[in-house]
Image (cartoon, rainbow, N blue to C red):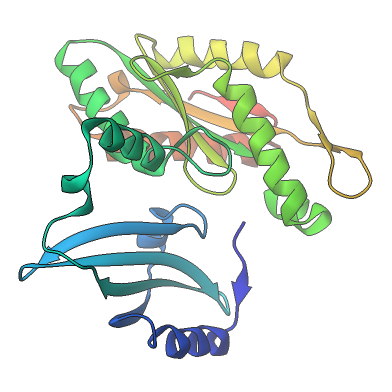
Length: 264
């Protein structure tokens, strides 16, 4: 879960980090840019610049209600990228780690935006229908305020693994964690109505309480809202439109009181 900083905390951190990094740059992010970052986790990248390999660390921080993207850069020894030094097996394991959410173990936003969207292209080219659903915990802010970070992390893992039981085949059915309490479910060869019916059946059988083991053991009740759409409802390979349609239906489900699936 995101930790709230003050802008003074951010300035102090930047000054202290400058002793270890060649460049430390905080940039205020707009809403669209902020949405593409997953939680407050650290993103690691390597860039070849002028014959020198730089390690680039990026992190999203909320300070006094504003979202900042912090980039820290430091040079590495040598002039070849780390992946060039890996064996094929090491490279495969590294890619697998980068595609999974460290907290819940399901696929992450990076996988969704790179791998899954590529699969959508392939399915469309092969004239296969595909559907997308956005799933979100209801009243997540209230739950966080009542239960705290540790219990919320446990709840997120519980929910993620409930969906993973049914959507864990990368070639056809996947679940990805996009942000704190927002998940995406993608499924090939199903229309929106078919996926919605399947989701309703799975959700009806899903536990609505998680046993929190932090502090005194207790049951934490929760519900979820779901909005889904399919490729047949948008023109061509317009994945932004497909995602937006899912967002609208998710919002409609939440506005109607939550604890339901909206498919248009």
